[in-house]
Amino acid sequence: DGNYESNKKYLMKKSFKTIKDKFVKVIWHDACSKSHWQDLREIKDWIDNDKGYLCENVGWVIDENKDFIVVCARKTDFDKTYGLCEKLPKKMIREVVLLK
Image 1: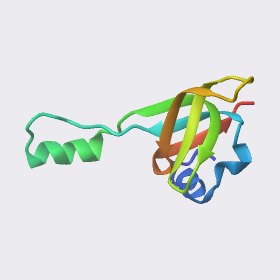
Image 2: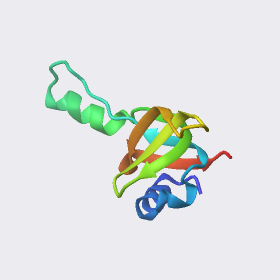
Image 3: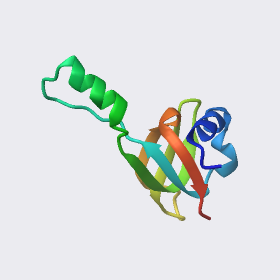
């Protein structure tokens, strides 16, 4: 429904087996870091105000376990090999859109 909290609860319970081998767009929150010295005030501002990046991957859902899904952007039909694969933590996924 577009509401992040409801999508998050749905995704944590959902199995991706129903969309295995389907072409999808996965929208997920990127982790980030800062490597410079900062005081507690700067850290507080960072955690409260920096929403971070939303990233998108497009590809086929190849596999999953309770914590991760694997999305691959390339595949062959003759020997079932895959390329440009990413293992995405389910807890960082905001939305999965079925494209095909």
